[in-house]
Amino acid sequence: MKDLRCPLCRQPLQLNPQGLACENRHQFDRAKEGYFNLLPVQNKHSREPGDAKEQLQARRQFLQAGFFDPLKQRITSLIPQQTQTLLDIGCGEGYFTHSFANALPDAQVYGVDIAKAGVRLAAKSAADKNRNVFAVASSFDLPFADQSLDVVTRIYAPSKDAELWRVIKPNGLLVIVAPAENHLLGLRQQIYAEVRPHGAPVTPAGFGLVAQERLTLGVEIKEKALCRALLSMTPFAWRLAAALRVQIEDEGLVDQLDFGIYTYQRLDHL
Ligand SMILES: C[S@@+](CC[C@H](N)C(=O)[O-])C[C@H]1O[C@@H](n2cnc3c(N)ncnc32)[C@H](O)[C@@H]1O
Ligand SMILES: [Zn+2]
Image (cartoon, rainbow, N blue to C red):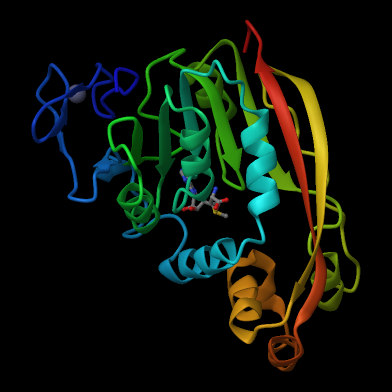
């Protein structure tokens, strides 16, 4: 855990029997599930920041049904085998993070999310809690030393370019996954009179694009509970008219999941 730094004074954090501490005696206890809370109260802008429990549960249900498995396999295969340190930003319940940790048995794999409920679930199911470490932290103020990480992944989560650049090693990689043009197009057509296509993300400052690919998957959801889960985890779905929502839940949904996977390399200059 040598890559972690104190969120208060920015000195390195060392593991002790209770948790983590810096030389200025800022102590961060380890929760019983194995995670650390590295989000200073002053950086917490609401009582329960990040995704709400309902969104988390819905996403969990949808992930567990296997709809994202091809995406998980594809991203995992893009991570270089020689990776020693990886951070998954906005890790949620750790669905992708655990896959990276399994594929890199010698690496230190971190996951951070601002929502404690997700981090708690992620930490609970980590096989090796010292090698796969989860923390409550904000992607806008990462509790990591400068140039400490070989790879950072950001799957549907926000971040700040300068922070990504600061924590990634020279020539290290940043993998961003974002919705591509036809992601849930059918659903969006039922909501918006004119559907605006999702564009490619802007290349973060201080990085160069090295590879990009699309992964498009057809989905057919018949079970009511899974339709409901998809609608609750999809940010724009609250705009659906109530009658239409009921109809989708009753009749099922046939649509596409469409992802853009972008790999960037850190440049020397921000
Ligand atoms: C759509 S979810 C994606 C979760 C996970 N990457 C996945 O694909 O299953 C977005 C996640 O970003 C987290 N998040 C939002 N703002 C954040 C921030 N400032 N710092 C860290 N995580 C944040 C949310 O709590 C949520 O878990
Ligand atoms: Zn400190």
